Image (cartoon, rainbow, N blue to C red):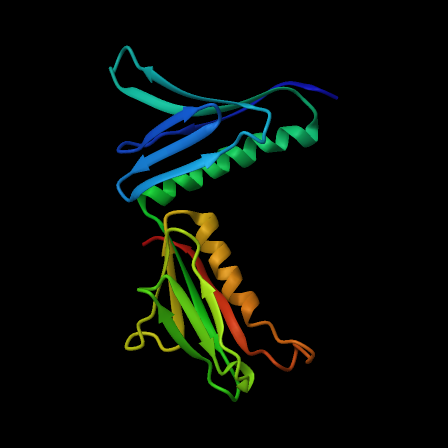
Length: 196
């Protein structure tokens, strides 16, 4: 069955400026600017502004529309709208993830590289190999040993980049050729999507 029109509206808060040209959406806010390309999806993105005649208050919103779509195609509308919502939140409050170092016997040694632009993991399960992970653009890693021991904090505006950097760190500490129920060593996400 075809659905004639599927649409979703994302309200634009104050202090946020959104521009759209040929499915490339730019969001500007107090924390910076994010750009995302939605050319792969067959839908319409439109930034509109409405003025209430009685109260004279302008309300702007982003409309995501898809015409003549089947059920599986229309899922893209909600996905794109959610991405735009995440971008708006990213440039207003940002995203913060916390990761915990877990080890039983061999303490994991962590060194930050280049002002938090990367991380070095040493002595994982007593191995001599040094694992190096570089952060994705716009992500910084901080560590405060005085407040919280064995905790890494990742911050950034782009939710995708922050969460993917967490995934890269987690995957670098995967236990190989052992029973993972017994060997629980690794770096795990403890808190996610916190406001900065």
